[in-house]
Image 1 (cartoon, rainbow, N blue to C red):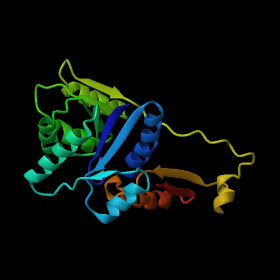
Image 2: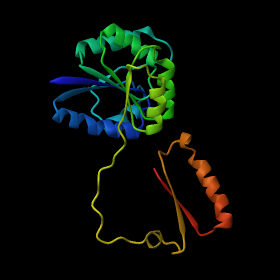
Image 3: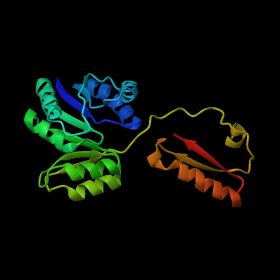
Length: 221
């Protein structure tokens, strides 16, 4: 059976962890055995990750440069000897690249799901060398393709959702929320992180209600 070594960066987002939790059993049904290794070091981060993914290995990555991390990771990769290494999240790519070189693993796939991950990856990958990258958005695919060599490969796999059966009876939203039928609804759907700037959305909404008091804001996250 072929094997994949999933390498998870610290502070992996909940959406990415949920996606990985669905990918691992699906890949197993297709004949791919998965080993999941996380570089997370905080207890809260580990607990959140375990909720979605069965992590079998941990390799703490210190904040400052530590040569033992590279050696420990390379040793772990040699012992697993995977057919493919799949890197998730925003890694310190220089340390990861060195560990990959020491382990002798050559088949590496990088997942990029945000502008921050794309910027970090492009800044740290070795120049004049092709890399295999998968992303979930067209604008990220265009940006990454522009920096790839002619032998590089960037593939976009769009996000998807599991279809849900429609309810037989749909309650009108104003009735469900107990507001006026003339209400105008604005919906902000995002991860509830400070970087998403939802406070600015609420601030702008307060200004909008001065001239359109019937406006209602719904935040989903």
